[in-house]
Each structure stands twice: as C-alpha cells, then as structure tokens.
Amino acid sequence: MVEEAAPGVVIVGAGHAGGSAAAFLRQYGWKGPITLIGEEPLLPYQRPPLSKAWLKREATADNLALRPARFYDQQRIETRLGTRVIAIDRPARRVLLEGGESLPYAHLILATGARPRRLGLPGEALDRVLSLRSAADADALAAVLGPGRRIAIIGGGYIGLEVAASARALGAEAVVIERERRVLARVAGEALSAFLGNRHRAEGVEVLTSTTTEAIEGEGGAACAVRLGDGRRIPCDAVLVGIGAMPEVSLAAAAGLDGPGGIEVDLAARTADPLIHAIGDCTRRPLPLYAREARLESVPNAIEQAKQAAADICGRPPPVPEVPWFWSDQYNLRLQIAGLAFDPAEAVLRGDPAEGSFAVFHLGADGRVLAVEAVNAPADFMAGRLLVARQMPVPPAQLRDTGLALKELAA
Amino acid sequence: MPRVTYVEYTGTEHSIDLEVGKSVMQGAVDNGIPGIDADCGGECACATCHVYVDEAFLARCGEPGEQEASMLGFAATAQPNSRLSCQITMSPELDGLVVRMPEAQH
Image (cartoon, rainbow over all chains, first blue to last red; front, side, top):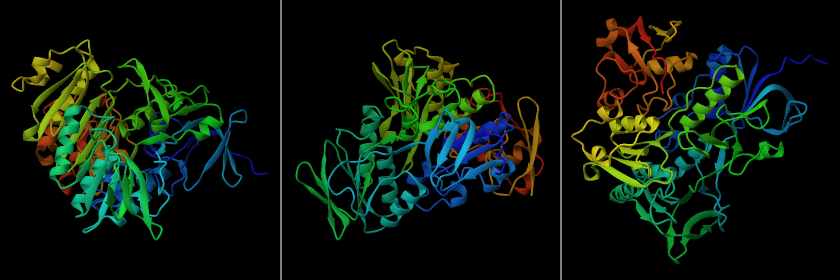
C-alpha cells in the first residue's frame, strides 16, 4: 500500500470563498498540504462579471480567473477540479469522493456555495429555461441573447436586473416579471427600487411588478412563453429564472452540521466541529454590527470568511469584522451598498435621483446609520461605510445637506 | 518584464516581474502577496487595494480617475501618494515601481 501524505487542509468548493481560503492559508503561514476540490472544471473565477462583462463578451476566461494556474503550483495548492465530494466521515476525518477515493483532512473547510432557487412551476424543465450561477450557465445565456431575441426574466433581483441591462446592450428585448410590488424588494429600499425600475423602463425593459408566474409554455421541448397569473402570455425565446439562491448544505447536513438557513458558524468561521470550518454563501454567520445572524451572498463576505477560517487554522487572531457591502453595475450606473438595513426607522435621501447621482442612508430607531445605498456616488458610499462601522447616530439634516462634506461627519 | 516591489506594512518586501498591461493589484493577487484584498476584483468599487506609491513613481502612474479619487478621499489612512492599485496599469516606464501597503484594507 502506498503511504499516504500527512493530512492537511481540504477545501470543498473552488469558488471565490474556497479559492481565497487557500490563498490566505499560505499568506498566514500554513505549511502543510492544501487540497482544493471543485465540482466545476474551472479554477476559481469571479462570478460577478457573469451577468455583465462576460455576458457581453467583454471579458476573457483569463480575466475571469481569480488567479492564474501557475499560482496554485507556486503556492503548492493541489486542485481537484471536476470532482464531487459525496460524504464527510467526521470520525475518520476523511472526505469521500465520487468514484470511491477518499482523502484525509486535518482541517476541512466547506465552501459549497449556493444553488439557484427553483420556481416549482410547470415548464421549468424545458430547454432554454436558464438560471445563472456558473460560467457554463452564463455561456448558455449568452447563446440566447442577441438582436431580435426576447428574454423573459422571472425575478427582479440583482441577477435579473443585471441580465436585463446586458440583454439591452446586446440588442435583445427583456421582460422582467416580479412578484413583489417593486424590483429588489428583498434587498433594497423603496427609493432605490423606484429609481432602478424607472431606469430599466427608460432603457426599453418591460418591468412587470406585482405579477406572478403561472407556468412556462413550450414548443418542441423549448420555452416559448411565460404565462402570468393574470392570464397574460409573454412570448419569448428564453427564460431566465433569478429568484434567489439556496445554501448548498447537503454535505454538511448529512454530517450533522446543518442549521436553519445555512451552516451555522461563528466569527472564526467555525462550525460545531472544531476541525471543520464553513465559509461563503453556504453559511449563516454572526453580524456583530447588528447583533444578529444572517446568510450573506456576496464576494466580500466570501473573502472575509475565508480570512476568518484561514486565520483560525493558522492560530492567528481573528480579523477585525468588516462592514458587509455589495455592488452592482447596470447601464452606466454603479451601485454600491454598505451595511444592512435591518428594521430601518428612517430613509434619508442625499442628492437628486433625477441627476443620476444620489445616496440613501437608512437609519435605525436609535439614529445610527444601518446602511447606505449609493448610485454613482462613490464618496457617499465610502462615507456611509465608515458611519456604519462607527455605529454613530447622525442627524438626518446633516446627511441630507449636500453642502456638507460627509468626510467631516465620518471623521 | 518590468519589476514591482510591494512592501508590506511590517516592512517585508516582495519583488515580482509584472507583465505590461496587468494591474499592480492583479500582480499582488496572482503572486499571493499579502496586504491587498481586492474584494471587487479590479472594478474600482471597494478601495481594498489601497497602496502608497513611492514618490519617484507617483507622476508616472498618472492621475487617479474621478471614481478612484472619490473613493480614496475616504479610504482609511489615505495620504497624498495613495492610489488604488487596480487602477495602476503596468508599463515599461514603471519598471522598478515600489508600492507600500497600509496596515489594513478595511
């Protein structure tokens, strides 16, 4: 029998979180083996451009990759791509791979991500009913977008709106079908939703709010229309379903590490098993600024938790908690959002949406800034991020006063 | 290839050859150099690739764009020679570039 190498860190999931964890482990001085296992055939890559530059063919595979292939050789990170982990054997400290092989671990990092939520409606299995999570999904989507084509987008969230903007840039028609009464209902305030809904309409996107979907109709096995709850029929060449994502927790759950709404972790990204960390979209994590827990789907969160896990494994103190943040690009709009508006008491507008540059500050009942949503207003985003971090109450009149530099307030 | 030296907050230096056309941020990420987070992957959206450019090279790096300047105005520990390294593109004139990293990017 061949002697087995000493167990090292095994990372399950080669997305932004998993890839970053491997890099931080080396930066923080981990000398042992690192094995990065991914189901997709690709080295870790950036997902945010999939709905934007990649779809518009403005990005190449090289600039989509997080790091070049030589990085993994130089850093002695073994990559196992196109490889599925089917079970975790906690007592034996091994992961079992599809095909029968198993790998030992000293530490295991679960970075299994999330998968698109399904509609659960008739017609969902037809051809040209797409979702957007992976580069392969984006390629399939790109193939159906072009002049003269029409895409029906179910869900007016970030994915749906970014794809609508890209579709318009590619000369395609887009119809956004949103169940709630406004786009981005779960993730943005009223003012931002209204502004973006209007902007998409001005760009020629049909935005249908308070509109439910009943079924997807097919012809010759492929989607050809969406039937709405009110009986209307939206003819289309393809359907994108963008109604959110579910944490990919099946491995963890089978190993007894599940929680409601994601794998429960602490601020060192530790699960209930001291040898197993979990990071990124699959986790439910503490948010110390808000004294609660939530699951965040974002690249900055993936990177922050990758740092937490790597620091913990290397015996370093945990990194300083960061302010959660998000960004999106649609048309010539750059959205930057810092913080999370849990139980907001007041929304304060700074600047003029009609001018295309403004920010909305969401304040809690105690007057502190919970979150800022900035549109083409990078300075307000940066100021807001500082105000959120400092947990400072700020008088609304001062936030509203564009003659007052926010730098003074945040200092 | 032109050479870039990154100096960590602790003083540790890392010198690499960086292909013309690549950003100084990407050079750090591609080589596992600590101290540059680059949350947004080079979109000038996050200011987590903040560096101090050695004075001798500052003019050769060009002026920051409007977006970058706005972000830098609020970056923790910004100085007159602060730049976002995702916005500095490697060129032959920048051979020998030295950038220093702040203590933290967040």
